[in-house]
Image (cartoon, rainbow, N blue to C red; front, side):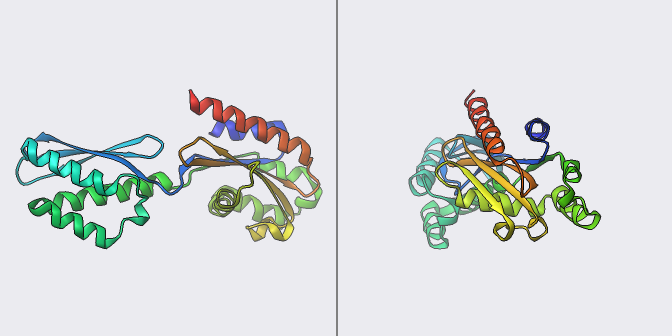
Length: 237
């Protein structure tokens, strides 16, 4: 991802950013519990997009094969295909009642799944070319440029652009933000062009170019489209 950001900055002579892919509305695809030893169960949680994460869950006593099968069937029958945010307290309580003496195991599986989804949805943003801002007189004013670069390097403000891009991407995946359209106030003298790359199964990320309002939009869009194709090919491998 960092190399992609550097390549974009070098090719366009503007500042660039790219977010790692995140799962939108993460859904549970499958849960598999198995006995590790007398004191621990291994929970394998598969999310849509075939993201596989493991958690070790402590138990007071080992489960026999029939108990393990029953728990696996109970969890998968009720949870498969559901986004985490649609798993209600009422549903959790219902599953706990059906789990009987294994209520704590069900609790631990829910906690593990929620933690995994939170981590998978954390945005990681890579940037490059911040110094290119000084190449353009309209952005090179010291105070203005410092504010833009500060937001650029801290990345929190860029998260707003990524979220806006992911939630409102057009059919082409390309969006242009100019002036008051910008979600970040300090960048309203800039133009930002973003592209949403889609790896399937709800997994998406954003590539963006930040530059002056007079940027070469046609060239930037062409570069972003080409990068989207390359990312798609790379992840399919």
